[in-house]
Length: 488
Image (cartoon, rainbow, N blue to C red; front, side, top):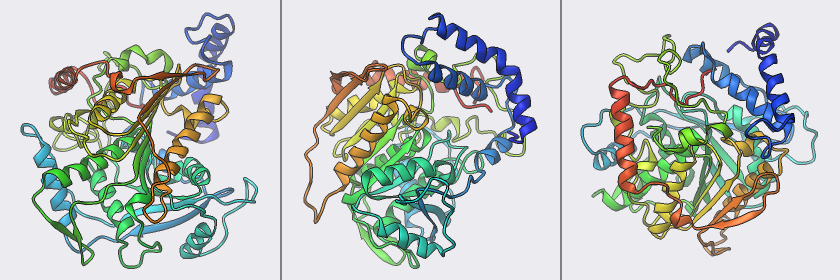
């Protein structure tokens, strides 16, 4: 996507009549969302929807490069860029492969990835400066020291950015991660995991697993001290939420099923069971890569994500240097045979027993039904689950509509959860969380309690059947890889 002034002008001018129509319909109360949204929200969703559902989508590599442009570092954030060293041992990869195979049903195909150094950004809040204050000319170590000088709690958020697994970067998410750091008094380690389609599953999950171990057992040359698992929260938005829940499911599987007693990591023996994080927190986490649940269609009016498509041309991405892959894979993130794997689609996970507390925040969006199923199952299995859903709000609204009461409340509740579960001092639990579900009404945010255990709109057997049917349709070419995916 070309972001030059002339290109943006060419992009927006044809959309002016469309935007004007949306404004008129809203003002005349003819829009189905007129009673739920203000005019500003209506226009922003209309514009985003038109950008993400282009009838002539840009090739993937151009989209990806555009999303990786660094906006720079300024204002109320400390950023320290680091590289988590690659371990000499191959245990983390071997254990990941064992876990994938132990959870696999049928003959799912994937390529065993290499272990690589993983880049990340330590992110903290920088107080008492203007929003346009430039970054100081310091070394990365000095930036980390400055960051730590303003940290007031032990909360450490291992953050995974969204972007459908093929877009975005820690640099695109500095504002929300610095905001999380501010509200929790802690810090974020925002991971630059490998993107698809160049690096398919399980590359990103291996990077996430390596980062978690690196927090607890710092590699040589790390700027940080060891972080206790009780102070770590897995968090992310959209596809990053997928990684957060998949990483949790991976740790649970390692502890319950693998016969190994330990792994080697940078010359250190790490005993099993692996410690669990303090919690997992996802805003609009994408938990079903098969894209099969009813809300994909029923909630499209409240979302900006592209609705399910029957048009063959615009349900697929144009060919370029990175797509389609050779051999053909059928999905940007993984082989189609892996869509129903719990480490690809956590919706397929059957066992969350023993998990750390979970927080899931959604709008009335296309992905919400998959979140409902995961939350309900986990709660039934004894996991503490905090569920929050905001009426008529779209995907990741808390990061887009900061001016709305719903956006403010959702983001604050997200940060509050992280602070509550991870602010333990000397192993003493600060707060006793209980499973709770809340529905927030549009505009007023009036709260209504909901039963988390009864959230699911389908039984587990029905979910499994829907995932299989959708995967089979993809394999037969009846649905393209671009279904509900952003197409810039």
